[in-house]
Length: 495
Image (cartoon, rainbow, N blue to C red; front, side, top):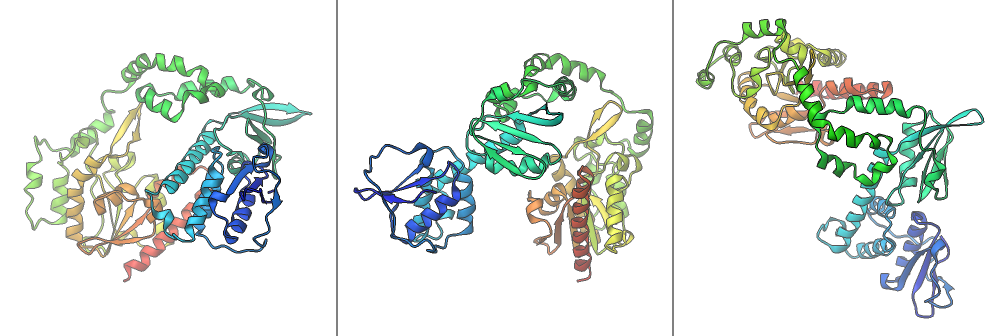
């Protein structure tokens, strides 16, 4: 930051070193605020774009000592760092105005209707959206320089986000030597540290590389015409980004042929289950026309009677394609009930909960936490396997709110008969079924919520989440977190 100066008209001019000079802005704002300089008397500009002197000869600001202190909420500092990356030339003045007001209005950031706060939030959202688009739409192209493999990418951001986004690409592509060029600055990674450079031109990046044809082949192969929603696609990937995406060249043809491709895909989908599936299904589905007998269960029905009645459940359409109802298992006097989402492919065929890959992870971690699964009751929020046929495979499909609500009748029966001290919600669907509303599992993980009936509900992830993590280190870290959750469950079981 260049020195803050004052014109004969009494206006202070602060010349920042660059468009994202947050440290310079923060230092100047602190000194100005402590000196009592009101926002209306401060003019902010970037050194490279200094205006002709409408303020006349400038004199250095001397009202505030360099070590002047000013206390503001940490939230403001974090949000200001994001907003300052916007291209709005008035952002510096807006942030100083908010800073000035915070001294007298400490709760200002919580007033969503305030014009200054609304504007600051709009700047933040625009920057965050641009950061997300850059991460989604940067495409590297391979080059060789003196026998060394490097990768170049061209992107056209709307805001000054290169510096803020660079650490993400360094983490994601640590093993590559790369540069991302943009009209608003460039960044390079040499394998050890980031370096930043001036704005660049699209002509500095090659138009294609040898791997591009392979990428286009892969892109065509994963295109699902049955799920094509052009309006939604263009909302997430506006056409202005297409010119820099290699796959953009095939998108129009894929859209044009989507109807025919969807028809062909449906024709290839099996219309009947495999012989083994049909045999198991015929064994477990009683010939019933409705669910009246299920609703007529006596109040004093035992858990085994409820389980038997559930074998003929027709409360939602999922029974039509599922092999059988997968009811809960465990002792009737269990002190803890684990609730998952729904049975998977292996559970559907076996008729038992948590016996597939996720169940093996679950069992291993319970063992590490010294919880005997045989003394717990394990069930699911939804008792039938919901899936999409994909050739001979059945791909898991998340149950919707209506299906969860329909099956909650069975879960309530299980809980009423077992009367556990604790229920563990394994994932969002289980939490929704147990609490009657959607809850943010990531945010509330590890919390215990007490229902109106006194049942305590512990929130955590579903063990299948661990299986979906590709990076070995990340997978092991998540397994450790889940183990700590189960250790907390063990302590709660003993209370």
